[in-house]
Image (tube, rainbow, N blue to C red; front, side, top):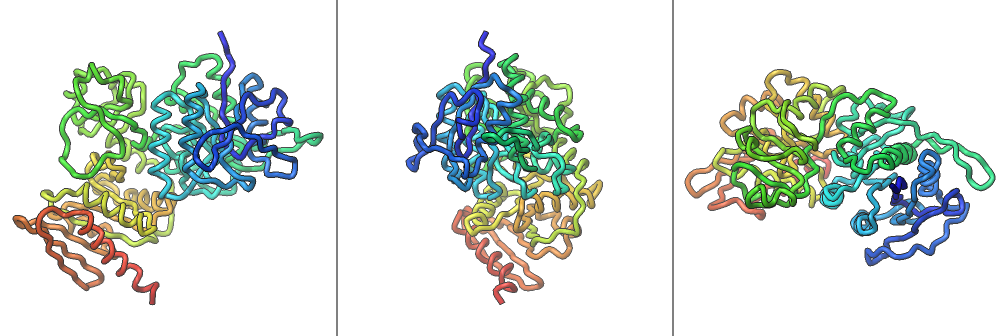
Length: 477
């Protein structure tokens, strides 16, 4: 049996002369987004980032076959558009293991990367990614279905908040390698922690190629130099889902594809099952699937080998959040919506409008189902309001959010206003027959609008412009 494992290093290229075994293949993504033979030579004066990563992998897994896929320039810069062709070429060339000692902290790149990563992980790809050295959430390292790696001895004090960062393991990044005739130690950087874990996983796969991302994430956690005990996965991994049961009807689009039909006939097309009750799950074989459970029952004993998310996951994240800041430092918008109005559509469109304006809105719903729209689920803050608020603060800090939008039931808005009594904007959306009444309050000033029929994108964008103008009034002078 062939025990060699192919590893693609997606980076700024590799100096093959420094490798004992050399490269099996060397390609680059060109300006048209096509993988072509890479004829660019890396000399000793250039930034040796990809080369260092390759030498670390080779040091700890000498039998692996290394492939270079260059998507970055000489200074280590590049665009996210190159990820898809790089991963597609890897998949078509039967390369399962990927090292990404790179990423982005720009929230606008998250959606593009998530869809691409989810597609190839659903096809069996294993991706190891370094988290950002800045200490903020980065993509794709923070994704659930990616193994996110950070270094020991970092001057940043974020390792204790690994759940919020999407960090799965913390290992050394200082490794002795030989550059020409000189032995050096790689620098203290998350970039050089990732290839070490990549090498360990390559060794595991050489003995058992059936290992999947869930098992390998757990193995990576076991290698960590700090204890990684709590699994607080975000429900961000879905490529194609089968939905069992009926949820809230909404015009908002899911962040993933769906498959329909008799489950026995289509189950091979779905990587995730979404269910609203245990009764629905009783007739489905979901052992080899991921599961998002939106019901209220206890699912501890359910037989699922993939990733699992339920309301309890978020409650666990809140409980084990250790971040302690100085209070929320971004504006808070409390959006009270009547039940008859499509809240998921309003939230997704408002989030999109802020993103188009360059603002990263941390957008909260209080129904677990909101996670299907890439919104943040937060349970009712009743048992421990301080823990609830600390978690929001940690999320907005690490995700570099510009504001918080919290959607609450209109009939209970007074209760929730007590959590953030000094919120910057209050909005209520009520329905009277065919008329939607929107009231916006800013420090005593009130604006009222009436919209007939369904609220559409243009209406939400108008609400956004009013909020944006008010929140930036002071800084504009």
